[in-house]
Length: 253
Image (cartoon, rainbow, N blue to C red; front, side, top):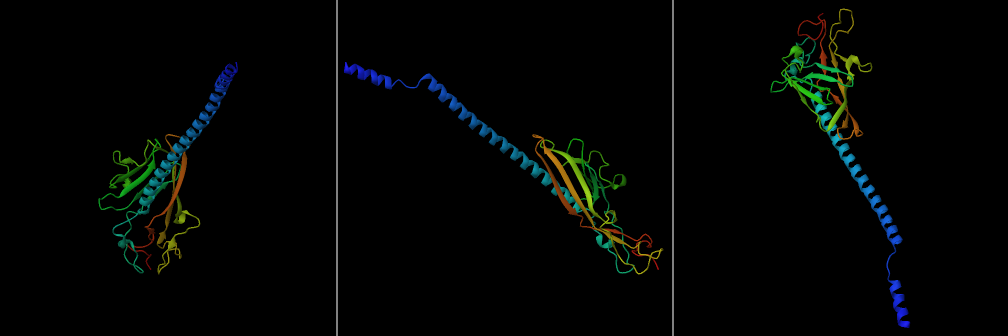
C-alpha cells in the first residue's frame, strides 16, 4: 500500500505545465518578440534616414563646390596684363570676360565668362523645372555671348533620381556700388572730371557672392538640407573712366 502511494505522489509531481501556464508563457514571449522587432525596425529606419541625410548632404556639398570653384574663375582673361593701368595715362584694354550676370530669386540663373585653352568661354548655372541644377558651357558665339543659345547646351549637374533641388539662390554680398557699405575703389587720376570731381575716374569693384542650395531626398521628402557657400571672384572688375580718351584710364587735361 505504501508503495502505491509513493508511485502516485511521484507521478503527480511530474505532470508538467498546465494550459494556463503555457498560454501565459507564450503571451510573455510574444511581448518580448514584439519589443525586439520594434527596436530592430526603429534601428533600420534610423539607419536608412541617416544614409539619406548623408547622401543628400554630400550631393549638395559637391554641387556647391563645383559652382563656387567655377564662379571664382569668373572674368579670367589670358591677356589680363593689358587691362592693368600704367601710371598716369598708360594704355589699357577692357576685359572682355568681366561680365557676371545673376538673377537673384529662389531659382537663380548665373551667366559668367572666363577663358579656357579649349576655346570655351561662356558658362552658366540654373535650376530647371524638374528640380535639377543644370550647367552650361559654350564658345560664347551666341546672341550676346551668353551661354545657352545653342541647341540643348545645358547638362544636368545634380542627380534627378536621388536629389530634388527646391531652391537655388545666388546673391551678391559685395558688388561695388550695388552694396551700400561697399563702395568701389577709385583710382586717382592727375586731372579732374568735367564736373571738377573724381567721379569719372576708373574704379575697381570687389565681387563676392553667396550660393545657397536647398534640396530634399527623392526617397523621403522629410529629409531636407540647406547649404550655403561664399565665394569671392578672384578677378576684380575694372571700370574705366567715361571721359578718358580711347584706351586711356584717366580723363585728359
